[in-house]
Image (cartoon, rainbow, N blue to C red; front, side, top):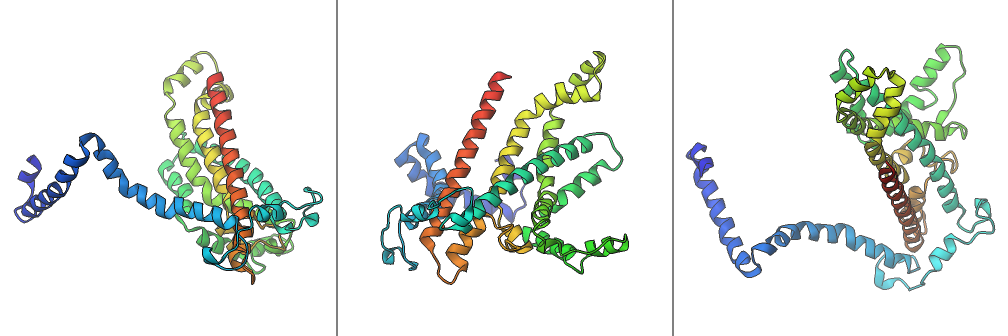
Length: 333
């Protein structure tokens, strides 16, 4: 009621009408379901949205993975059981994609593993170094914090287009290389450089987000611990090893899980930057799923759905392993 006294005369009647309308609607529901169950009523809209846009597509994807043909509607698709999974895993030698029936699928797996290892390692390392630097008392610290976070606000497509312009044959990077006396290269068309630049652009675009998380973790460490370690004669390296890292490990673990999930699901940025090329050098699993299901002349929805299930299960297993390792490390600590 105190709120009503500070509102202007025009707003007060509208607010009273809304309160009365909500009360009229919710009171009969509350009498029917009871006060203890009203929480379910308020959660119901969110559950409906989750069911329609997340759960139902997941179940539909499982159904498509068990069907064949090129028809789109489920009623027109014949049931084939696990044939799509058998097609994906039909290989003479799993270490040689050319010996597999779906060689592009296995190339996507190997490229994804390579990309995830280098990208996650680089993004965690540089995010940690940046967070440590931004946590110190430096000039214009607030400015630099915003600068490092700014790329996160950009669309992945915009980031890819900007760097594609920088890395093209007549781009900014080659202009600098030629100015320094070097020889220009087609960076994104060179198999030896394409994966490097894909990882580099991804780290540049995303590290601000993980830096912010690690910076929050660093600021949560009590400064008294550093004062105590300095009294004991610890240097900066010992502070980092025995104070900073043990207390930052829970935050570091969150960053590792988020970075891994994002890296495995990477698609839009690489698709715009290289299109999966040169050849299939930077084609990851998500691009294989998209190309098989939507981009090829023959749209194999069942095979694409089966590949997405393999990717989803792999990501689930990796996440569970990380959680288990994180729990074991916390218990050991």
